[in-house]
Image (cartoon, rainbow, N blue to C red):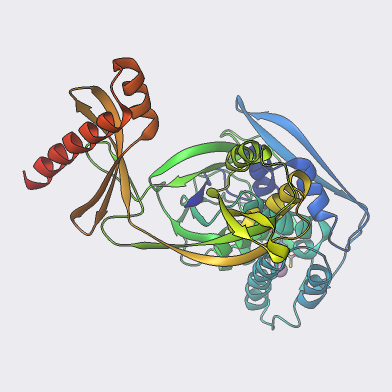
Length: 408
Ligand SMILES: O=C([S-])c1cc(C(=O)S)c[n+]([C@@H]2O[C@H](COP(=O)(O)O)[C@@H](O)[C@H]2O)c1
Ligand code: NI
């Protein structure tokens, strides 16, 4: 499972979140073209690389000509609903704004229908929030975690006048979240940042075990005595790292469940030489699996079903690639639920040498040991032994070692 960890050592705001997402690999041009799907004009998006206390990060600027506006929640909802963004993005963005409205309503003792946003409903806040939702969706983040949140202290000036830090709406949004201040007299967490992180975050604490793919830094406005950055780390969630250093995927013992999409296209008119190239291309682009089946179509035409198992956020990427690279002009897409045994990758020492094996367990019993093909191929080539023999030896010796460990 792909997860994100936000390290909020200098707080969190909407533009820091957007900067961190871009710094961690969100495609800038893609983000701009996604945001252009909102019925909003009169803004410009800019990004720049900045250095904060020697650390490089991305600062996103949302430049608008908008004067002081008072939007209600329903105005923001309408803007988002009237966009051509995917439903998941619209729903999550509206959820974040609804959280903001609830916090504002509580602070100003009114209702979410009546509350009018000042700064937090301005165009830059809409861009920050919808952009952050797009970013997490585009990067395929399935779960979000965060550190305890550094809030800052003192006072800040806004449309309401002078406010204590954390601002009342921020404080309301941070109910139940571990927060702290180290006497930095700045507003480190804004209502927008607090609404985004609390709408997503599963747990505020230390970083869960993960295999890191990318880290990005989103820069805040001011220069502080600490690096004014929000650090975002993206990677694959590991359910456990044992004291032996072995990594376990998918928890201990129980079958775990995940959602994915199956894309299929029936192809009867493409040069079969292309399939090898396409399978590699789709796998490199992040498909979880790609496979072919022979079928007999109407008029007795022999054909191929090209199937791709993909993550839900990859839909657009892959239908574009299928239409661009194959002769297909239509794809079927359906949601699938995957049930998976937890597994771990272990390196075993055998009489032929070292090899990795994938070890699957159900509860506490060993269910499968699969030697890694590439390691076996290398050993077979190096030692001029038939591949199937190498495979059997690795599997047998791995079983013996693992069973011995389990019983000791
Ligand atoms: O716009 C509104 S209603 C607003 C409410 C509050 C409360 O705490 S109530 C605070 N603020 C301040 O506005 C700026 C901008 O916030 P963003 O989240 O849009 O970056 C910030 O100083 C808030 O504390 C605005
Ligand atoms: Ni307010």
